[in-house]
Image 1: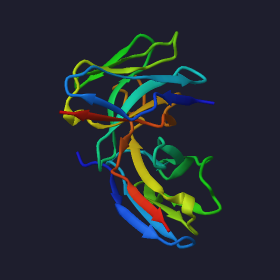
Image 2: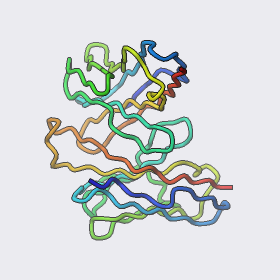
Image 3: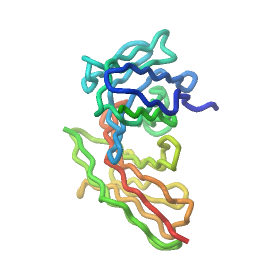
Image 4: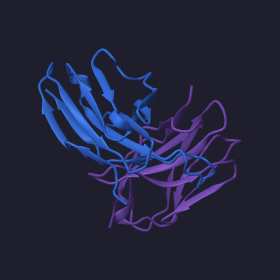
Length: 119
Length: 111
């Protein structure tokens, strides 16, 4: 099966500019996540979608970050305006909450990530 | 809140050495526990998991046992290979969808 697709893989921008990342999850996965991974740290959840509705965006800096998932499939994450501290890898992941293979535990499938450098 | 603490790296081993990467957690509720691995230039991928106390997850020669009494999920492998060089993340999941990750441990295996 095809994996989680993300683009672009790399992006370099100046501070105060805007940037957008795109994610296409595994076909049929209803749940989609955006994580921010700063160098040397573990992934931190920014937002979680169930179909096209937001389940959790408590860690999303809403003054500059926005995300949408139209039609419950692809998703975009936007940063405007970017700050130096936004330099990180932005990971998209998806899961199928219907998957009962592991007694209901939810396994995430990650994309390769989009590396953002803000200068 | 929920948190995961991993042993700090980097860890450098010779090929065929024994590996242990410590992971302890704090969670409200009854978590499932995971180890993810990130190879250079790739996304995170599931290595193994355990969903209840005393469960042992295993994959590719790696093992980890869910220890509720010590709130731990240490990763072990009896004989590492150069191809095991990667970053390893311990994670917990308390309810479906909300995972908490440790900061990762970088493993380098030298021939």
